Amino acid sequence: MAAAKKAVLGPLVGAVDQGTSSTRFLVFNSKTAELLSHHQVEIKQEFPREGWVEQDPKEILQSVYECIEKTCEKLGQLNIDISNIKAIGVSNQRETTVVWDKLTGEPLYNALAAPVSPGSSVPVAVVPSGSSVPAAGTSSVWLDLRTQSTVENLSKRIPGNNNFVKSLTGGLNGGVHCTDVTNASRTMLFNIHSLEWDKELCEFFGIPMEILPNVRSSSEIYGLMKISHSLKAGALEGVPISGCLGDQSAALVGQMCFQDGQAKNTYGTGCFLLCNTGRKCVFSEHGLLTTVAYKLGRDKPVYYALEGSVAIAGAVIRWLRDNLGIIKSSEEIEKLAKEVGTSYGCYFVPAFSGLYAPYWEPSARGIICGLTQFTNKCHIAFAALEAVCFQTREILDAMNRDCGIPLSHLQVDGGMTSNKILMQLQADILYIPVVKPSMPETTALGAAMAAGAAEGVGVWSLEPEDLSAVTMERFEPQINAEESEIRYSTWKKAVMKSIGWVTTQSPESVSFFFPLLYGAGSELAVLKLEFVILSPRLLGSQIEMPLCPALKFYISLFSTASINSKGDPSIFCSLPLGFFIVSSMVMLIGARYISGIP
Image 1 (cartoon, rainbow, N blue to C red):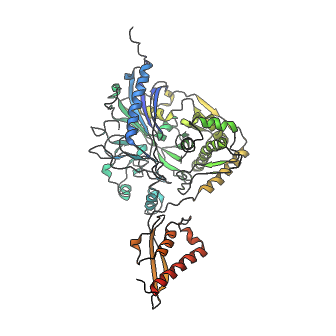
Image 2 (cartoon, helix red, strand yellow):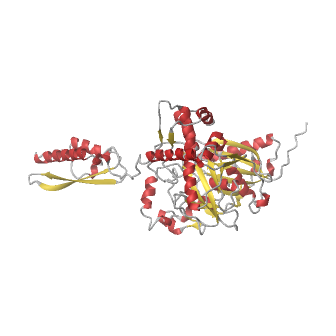
Image 3 (tube, rainbow, N blue to C red):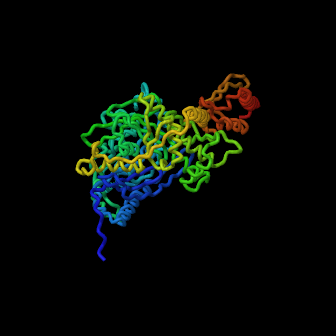
C-alpha cells in the first residue's frame, strides 16, 4: 500500500517550555493557534540541605531533546509533516542560573539563584558563554535560599535607597550565547531603561561584563537548530530559533495581554501575576517588582509589567504527594477537596521558602493551623488549594493599589487551572470572575507566537485583527462578599503566625564581652568570646585564654542558642538564666586563676 498522505496544515511553530517541574515541546498551527501535539518529561528536584533546591542542567537539556524527538514521532503518527515547522520559540524558568566553562562546555560548579527580594531579582541568563537557554551545567533553582545572607549583606552596601537596583544552537560547537530582555531584566545587572547591562551594577556585584550574554529582543532569529546526535528527529536541524521569553512574559503574550492594564496569573510550581503597564515603568509601593514584559522585535518598543510572585503553588500539591503521601497523584487533590467542600477552619501557609510578594519575609516557614480532632486529609487538601488562592488575593490587592484601577476579572493559565475546585475557590476569594482559556498552554503559545512573528520568519501575525479568538471558561463568585472577607482575614492571621520562625543572619563572628575579676591583684579584665552563631561548637582558636571543660560546656549553650527576631541569642533574653550562666563563668574562671592553675 502506498504511504499515507501527509496532512497539510500550513506553517507550524514549535515551542520549548522548560519549567521548574517539567520540560515540554509543543507544536502549534500558526494560523489557528491550535495545539497539534506535545510531549512532557518531569524534571527531578533535589533538596540536599535545608533551603537548597537543585536541578541537573544536563538532565534538563536531555529532556528538551527527548521532548522534541517524541513530539515529532507523535506528529508522524498523525500524518503531519514536521518539515512544516518553520520556527522554534523557547520559554524558560527564570532566575535559575547555569554557569559553565566556555572552552569545555562543562559546568564549573553548582550555579546559585539568590532569593528574590523587593525591587530586585536574580540571574537567569546563561553565563559565561556557550549556547542560549537551556544549557548544560549544574543549577540551583529560583526557590533556593542558600544565598539569602549574601543578599542581605549586599543590601547593606546599597547607597541611598533600594531604587539603586530597581542552548540549543550548538553550545560549544559554534553556538550562540545570548538571552532576551525579559530574562536579562531578572538578573539585577540589567538597566531596564537603556536595555543594556549596567556597568555600575556589574561593578557593584563584581560581575565581569564580558562573561554576560548578548541581550536581544524577544522575537528575532538568534540562530539555527542543531540536533543532538542521539536524536532521530533530524528534520528540525536548521529550523530558526526565533523566540525567547521568560516563562511569565511568555504567558502574558500567550494570554494576549497586549493592552495597558491587562493581567494574567499563571498557576505552576509558584504563582505569578503580571499586569501590563504599557511603555512606562510603574514602580510599586506595595512589594511588587517592575520588570520587562516583552520586546517583540529588534525595532519594536519595549513593554513593562508589574509582577507579584508566590513561591509555593503547585509545589504544595507535590509536597502533599511526595513528602506526606496524602495523595498518590496531583489529580487526587481535587477529589479529596470535593469530598468535604471546606477546610473546616484549617489554614495552610506553605511558606517553605519564606514568603514572597507582598511580604518578602525570608524568616517565614510553613504552618498548618486551626487543627482539631475532626480534621482529616481532605480538609488539609482543601486548605492547600485555598492557600494558593489567598496568596493570589494578596498580590492582586497590592497590584490594585499600585495601578489605581481594580481588575474587573482575572485571566488565568497553567497546569493547576484544570482543577475546577481551585478555580471556583479563586473566584470566591477574589470576589471577581476568573477567566480560563480552553487551551491552558499559554506559556508555550506565547513563545511560539514570538518565534512565528520574528522578522525573517513571518508566519504568525500579532496584529489585533489577526489574532485568533480564544474560547474561555468563566468562574463567577458563588459566596457573598462578607464571607469572602472573613476567610481572607483569618488567612492573614495565619500568615502572621508563620513569620519569624528562622533567622537569616549570616554566620559571622559575634563577640560577647564579660567583665571578671582574676588573679591576686583582683584586676578588672575582659574576657572576649567570639563564636559563630548557630554553630554547634566554639571556635577555640579565637578565644584569648584556655578554658576548662565546664566553661566550654556553658559556652556551647551560647553557641547553639536560638536567635530571636532581633538577632539576639534567646538565652540572653531570660535575665535569671543569663545571670546564672555569667556568674558561673566568672566563678569558674576566677577560681581557676586564684588557685594558680595555668
